[in-house]
Length: 248
Image (tube, rainbow, N blue to C red; front, side, top):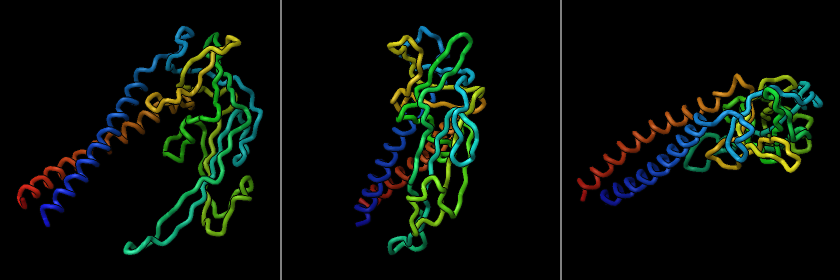
């Protein structure tokens, strides 16, 4: 009986270790790509590049929540509520649901880098790190607010069970000094354009230049946390292996 339990625990620990090891190795690969990304050069077509420049696009919008004049914005609203945990667990469990995600109508931004004009294709698949505060990574100008009242922009999605609403808003404005990571392409019109790579190992994002290292710091933090857990798993594996041998 005890041998069986020790073997099951050992297998679970090994599976957990392998999954976390692969995730950590992948994070290290992303980190290496971020460190080695080349600066923009108009000869690097179809390559992963970093563009640093000033936003030329005019402020044609107001951010829906903060009412800031901007050239681009993204807003996400999450509904929060709680339910009782299933027995035998006790206490409450928190739930979150995205009830609104909206992007400004402009999907192409102009950035000047020296004499070159580079267009940033925001597109529908923008990851551009899905707004900041939600994942603890603030890249653009950002604001995070919690309220018991559903914002007017998504009032139709309100429900009685929702107790709080989390509003996450990010934007950039004309003249902001930006940095963009993505795939450099040349359009059929001969324009230079940065698009999302659509590859997780080569992150695509846009942010204020002073926040460029924020994503790298977040990845380093995750790698550090994972490394500590890997050590814990290894200790557990050795202990479970020893117990399975002892009870054999």
